Image (cartoon, rainbow, N blue to C red; front, side):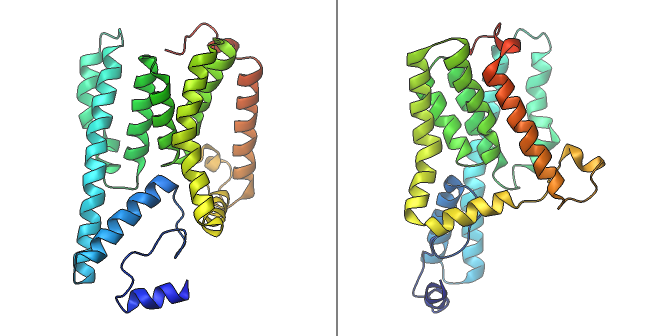
Length: 248
């Protein structure tokens, strides 16, 4: 708001709240981290340059920690594999170019680490923790929603495991639904801006870009929603290719 901005410019308002005081386009877990980092930076520094450094250091520390979790989780998942080349694959975890790029760009490492840790807990049949972690991943990056959808469907329709499904869904509700609900309660306008931002986003790395050369074309979105709807519907209705594969 204008009043919040003026108070912040005068130095009297140290902790502007994302979604409430200004537009913030990322999901609520990122918004919470952003609020903590900016509030800490402006509360304990005396210059804007110092605040920027503190803000950056906080995010760097969180991303570095979650990157360590990501590498550990991939290592643990590979240990469950029977592949003969898994030793080489473990080395590649540290050498992958995306490992370097996404350790300093955005919060992809955070979403990936939480998601794969949730997958690891699924293999251990700890379904509440699995749903919670996969839900927190969705609260960091919306595009990871496909994985908990897969497991929820698997536990419900394919294996018919009622109690496991309920534990998984309860965990996902806490990690992936409750944060968005709280955000809506805190700031309906901020929630709407978040939703509109993602709905209006351009074609980023779309497979269709080779054919449709305009990143802003509505055809990209229509194709995306159509493909997702068809795949989800086919999986829900049939799921035959997955019937021989257990949730673990």
